[in-house]
Length: 111
Image (tube, rainbow, N blue to C red; front, side, top):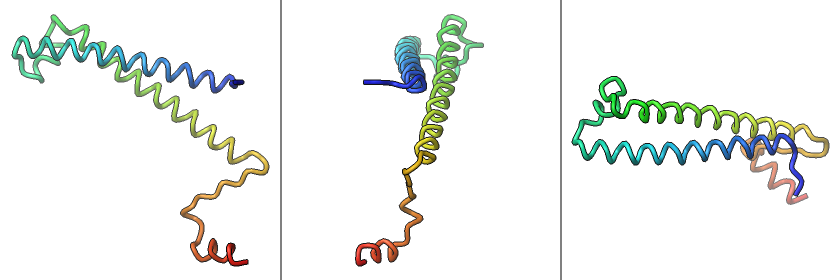
């Protein structure tokens, strides 16, 4: 299968996204186990200013959330650009179904 450079970029973005998601899930599991073991209130436990023991892991979760948002924004930008490229290709006319009048479509079938 042939892939374009832009497609490979998207694959790399998504690979990084799912890697960050897996790391975040692992950290969240560890943090939640620790919180339950201590019986600490959620708000207090997840505040890195009041929980020095887990501050690094809490901050890493926040950083991973930000990274995931940025990566998903890049993937969405890629999708918009690909959709725009498809619409601008000669011979391809994509019409939004909501812009077609039902009577016009029925008229086309009758002709």
